[in-house]
Length: 281
Image (cartoon, rainbow, N blue to C red; front, side, top):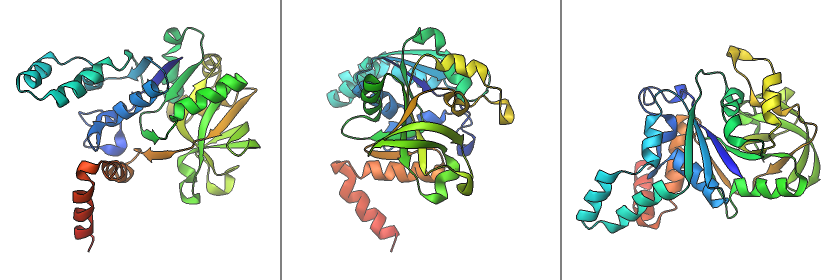
């Protein structure tokens, strides 16, 4: 299975830092956000990845490319641990790139992958969430797709105050972690939401999605919403993600995620905890 990572957005919620730097390259602890996403795809058994980029996103390509000058310097300096880490980034997977020519929404961005996908089911991982779990989130979805051979979307229960930030599903429960989707609503008001089950930016889609994207009319701002296209599937499923999700969609959540992930590293954990306790006195 191939994976598609849309990374063409302007990152306006992070301005001014995203004026000249892609949002996807903002570091979460010691790695750019998009590296965590690529690592999830690779851990799920995917080694063919297409990243949808746009103007000003060249640093994403540079990050996953070889850096001969840096590698030479690290080797000459005897910094072999850093050298191995840097080399592994460019060897993780076969990564391809295509540009979304205009900012026309997530549905349009995914349509840019049609030729690369070539009629097969594929995974989609959004670049503003980091999913941590024993079984990678994308692999959990792939397992459901293998069983039902239908589109499957990762979902989680979201608190009331965050419902308006998510696409929300209406569904009938199959078991404790799986729902048959009956409808999807993009960012509804709490009183209009059909449930508290929010879409969290991971999908395994059948190739019919490209036909459905072509069918849906543009919405607010002339954007083509993926949610509108997903509603056209006669059968699709929502799978509750079993793991920890880090939202990188705004500056506060980005800062929280960076701290939480840093606290998982033993080499900085105690020093960081002491610092946080000191400044919060």
